[in-house]
Image (tube, rainbow, N blue to C red):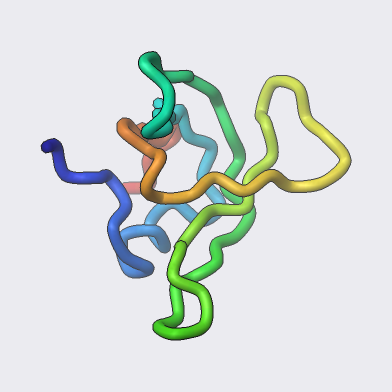
Length: 85
């Protein structure tokens, strides 16, 4: 199995404030979905309290009223559009 692009909070911090392209795939689905998102925040896992780290994002194309959650274990590809130097 391929390593996940985001496996911990330290890796996730690199994407905070970035606009990214993500390939998402859920275990129950046979195909993946691609989208462009603004990464606004992150929720870090805490043992015994909340085990699933995820990003808070806004869809860069369609916007929205509130951020969506994208869980790190669903991300298969993660590419920043304007990578920082």
